[in-house]
Image (tube, rainbow, N blue to C red; front, top):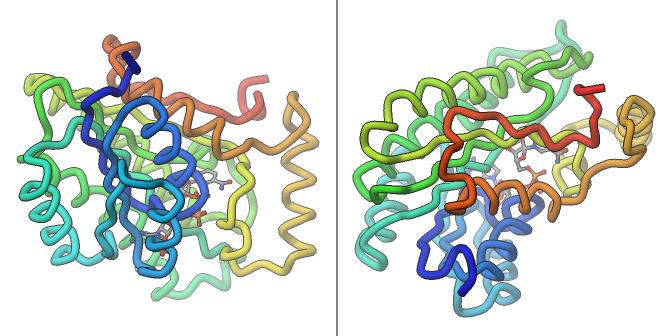
Length: 249
Ligand SMILES: NC(=O)c1ccc[n+]([C@@H]2O[C@H](COP(=O)([O-])OP(=O)(O)OC[C@H]3O[C@@H](n4cnc5c(N)ncnc54)[C@H](OP(=O)(O)O)[C@@H]3O)[C@@H](O)[C@H]2O)c1
């Protein structure tokens, strides 16, 4: 008997990085997984790897019609959700004075509005005992240059973790946050910095990290799998920071 046997899990942004590693881990622990993302090709590649315990629904979390379609399909196919990992997120980074209104709206639309409505629209399907996990970041608690909007979105995610935990507890739904530190995923190729700037940023973070390295997506997946499982039955509203000790020490 594995700890996520017979659980139905939805992972937004499950075609890459932390979401894909979590899909692998949930499946290894016995779950049936539904992954989402905007790019159909990336979803197809992920499903080819994950096998029959996974299905995908293409969609953009910033588009509420896509979210309605996602949860209609999940409802029709599986009837309920036991685990929701609201993981999809983006991080175009820029100096404060260079941030445009469009950059600001795009980030909040995906990381905050998209995550908020992902949970709201999943709610009718969330089973008693369900676990909701929100992917925030250590940046919710730190002040890295060039991350003003991204960090603000992640602070909002952390805040939602507290409020939704309180509001959904009477329905038997636990809501927790996982806050990764620097984690090696394709994310860093999409932030709009040059390779040299990403490398310099990574090196400066690693220097401040007692464990002396970046995290692996599997290490964040392990935290999500714990929060998803009954082993975390007394956790709600918590923020598990997996950052090699960067902000703790
Ligand atoms: N990597 C890190 O160092 C780190 C640290 C702290 C927190 N995080 C957080 O961890 C989460 C996952 O990041 P990652 O590192 O795994 O990044 P990643 O490798 O770039 O994966 C991001 C995933 O989200 C999907 N996605 C992006 N925008 C979406 C949208 N609007 N609608 C639906 N899906 C969308 C992507 O697929 P498509 O592009 O095809 O849509 C992809 O599957 C993010 O919330 C990120 O902020 C990452």
